[in-house]
Amino acid sequence: MFKHNAIFLALLVPVTASATDDIDLRNLREQVQQLEQRVQRTESNAAVANRPAAAGANAFNPAISLVLQGTYGKFDQDPAIPSTGFAMSPNNNGYSRSFSLNESELGLSANIDPQFSGVATISLAPEGSSSVENAYVQTTSLGNGLNLKMGRFFSGLGYLNDVHAHAWDFVDQPLVYRTFWDKQLGEDGLQLKWLAPADIFIELGAELGRGRGYPGTDRQDNNGAGAEALFAHLGDDIGASSSWRAGVSMHQTKRVNAVSNNVPDLHATAGGVSNSFSGDSKTTGLDFIWKYAPNGNTTVTSFKLQGEYFQRTENGLLTYDTAGAAITDSYSVSQSGWYAQGVYQFMPHWRAGLRYDQLNSGNAEVGTTNAANVISNYTYTPTRYTLMFDYSPSEFSRLRLQLAQDKSRAGLSDNQLFVQYIMSLGAHGAHQF
Image (cartoon, rainbow, N blue to C red; front, side, top):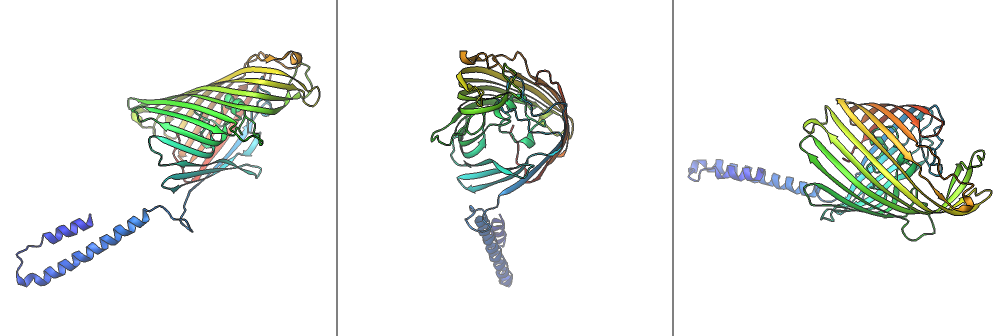
């Protein structure tokens, strides 16, 4: 732009200038040449700055973030007691009584080169240990709406599964996520997504992994894939104020010698027994979310309604009381769970939310040799009601109060209270729809 202006100024000099103006004309031309040289140097420097970073010191500069979380929890019952009918699931609450430093997240992300970008999320446990939550590379130039992810990641099935904890609308996950996925399904493997070139949102995805996350078992002697997942999402806008997304998903894996401790039996053994299961696990799911904000402006008021349903069928062999009787016979069960929640931002920075959870432990088909040992029908429906209020001074901080009445355990009604803070330091990426 400066170069063009300089040339234009030179053209403005009258070609009929008299001899007495020759000195001024030469001076003007020298100034124009100097300006052109400066512009060329500026453009050359900009081109160098825009080149892909070369390997070496100071050539790689990732975005770094740290998310700090803490809670105060009050429970009427022991939070470690599992939901009735799901004693063979981890049912990991992940929270304890009194003050607690929750899991912190250290995140790094950057473009690697024109073809790849990378992301890593390190989980920092309150006890002082650390683990890799996410660590993957993904393509940036496949084209045709394709994206390939390789490494460790949260599965794309459902809606909440690949949402990090600091972006949840409630302190904890719904009951169905706790019992079916041990809070979240993580995988080591490959994920391929395709975004259709359409006026509406259409996304298809497939995953292939080792099956390390529950309900799978991490088999070190298996060279092949241990789990597969498929999912599809469809969404669109409704006018200027509303949008929606719906999805279906499927996940299958194998469980090999998956031991569950403290499982209640018909003989009411003190502390329960230890059982072992080997077989196939298949889960299908539905998810839906609808968002509303007047004229698309979410800064003042907004409303979000979402829900998910999962059904899991497991078929295989169950070994009852591995430390004692060790009786093995066939076992098959179909279980389900769902939740529905709404979150309303009634004024800037302030929100309120209500969630309902329900599980169905199903009616198991137990082999004849274990019919007198294993409970096939618990005749109880676990439920929970949760109320939430939170205040977010900015997108980097949130304070939350949560109350819940948990009736997921027969005869053990649990009134729960949480106070939580979530603080983000450093880079803060955009959250999913």
